[in-house]
Length: 143
Image (cartoon, rainbow, N blue to C red; front, side, top):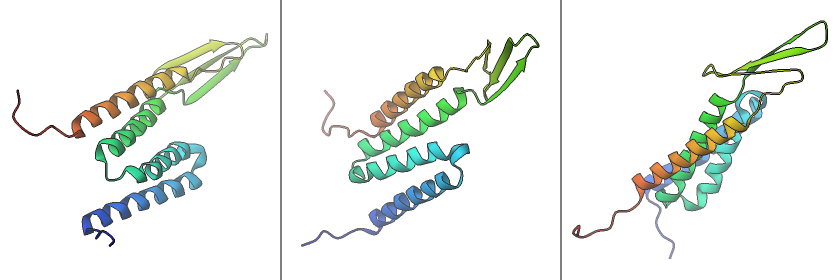
């Protein structure tokens, strides 16, 4: 006999699928601007589908991905300006929303590793904090 689906569980399922579809559509519409983070989060939502009844698994994963994307996007260089001298020796400066300046001479490419390290650190911290908040507490008296 098939288990009966409660209305709450069905609505959460519909919300997750709807959110995954909307994020996928956003990725298709705005690939160059914010599409990759939306695609990553949509794929994580679909991957967490199997663990939807296990909040202590699915929510920390999603919190970690969101924190990674947000922090990495804030740390990564966004706009760069290059100045070329007559001698052919130029200077490049890049900025991000937080005001961190990346600059160098010659054929400088701003590094992405600081954004990656900060994003991974924030993602792991967010996942750990969410997991600690959602894990089941043992029942019974505290010894």
